[in-house]
Image (cartoon, rainbow, N blue to C red; front, side, top):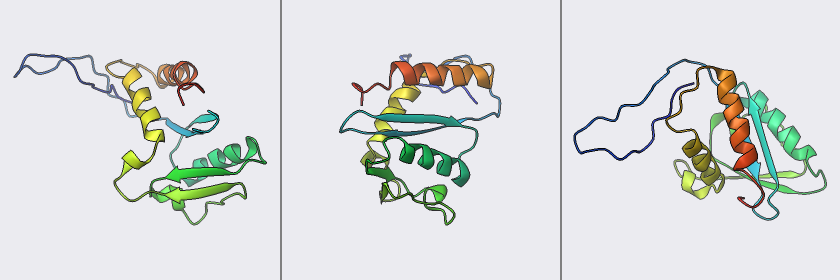
Length: 144
């Protein structure tokens, strides 16, 4: 967990000064967003690994189980791990390496990060509350 520095107006040659709190605790946000109907699934999980990704896939599959879901992914190691079980109603499309601009979900993450810029979170619980607040307020069907 750290304070994310964002852009700011400042005089040339002047270093930006902001509050900073550096603690090594993490939480991870997994999300899937449908541009067709605005459906949203966002989960905050303790680790970014194949096991937690599988939990996310199961939840995604169970949300409207008769609907086929096409998921766009980068080539992160846990996205195509050997132990990952791809469920029947999920199809995967992998984008080329180093091309996040091809994944529409990156715009959602960008807007989320902007809402969290230059804020000091003293505990991981405070950060999780802010994530939940942003998900409820920002990531709506209209936004997607």
